[in-house]
Amino acid sequence: MNRKEQIYQTLYSAAEQGFSALFREHPEHYYYAALIMMDAAAPCITAMSEEILSRLDPELRWSYGDSPYTGYADKRCFQDVNALFQKDVWSNELDNETFQRRVTDWQKIMIKVMQSLSENGIFNAYPNLFRNAEAYPPKGDFNRKNAKKLNSPAVFKKWFADNPDMEEEPQISGFREVWHPTMCSVTLIKPLPAKSLAIALRKAFASPLNMGEFLKGCEAPPFVISAEFRHREAKEILSAHPEYTEFLSVQILPQKTEALPY
Image (cartoon, rainbow, N blue to C red; front, side, top):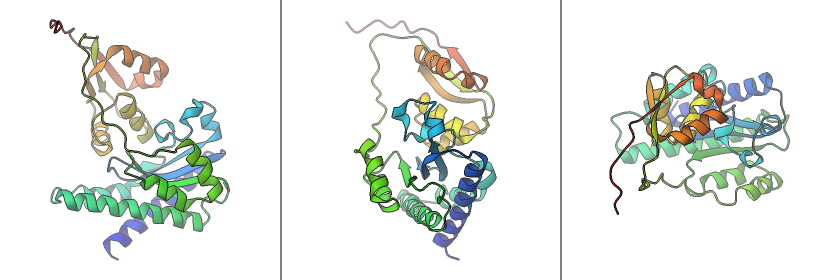
């Protein structure tokens, strides 16, 4: 078995087990399912159902970061995928060109896996399900092309109406306000029970780490998620998500007193 065949077989087996477990353990009305690679981290599954969406803002209909099913069954089903990805992609011996090429190989195999899952009936119970193989942040028209390839014209059209522009995420700006708001540090103090929670925390606190680095940090608390974050925004996040407080320590930093430049 060559390298690409091994990746395909390993990823297909994990995705089949993961989606089957999700649909069996949470029998809901699913409208979205995908294999997703976040910042060159190992692929995982994600999905959304009408039941989950009913508890969210409708604008989050396609938001993998707000789905509790992102990374579902990762520890049960994706251990071999994570180990193989680490060995194949994150080897210290790879130069940048080889690294990028291998990431692209995995992304192409994700498409093939989703096609095979569809052909083998994994999604048959959900005839109007939108399915995809996705990369985040999006690279060019990768996500859109895959969506068109993996779905019927009617299903693709419905998704595309909500996602007309699939562009790369803007870089986090380094701009600092001339006034000095109260800042705080945000530290993970205990292990997280699910990968989906790590994804949500990374998004909420705008971590500059890629997903692979962030997940690795979460495995060994204490882990500084943000060394400097606006305290007002941190309070708003914790107020909206009180479940985060069990895992986080928020410490106010000394107030800066430099003179304003005028």
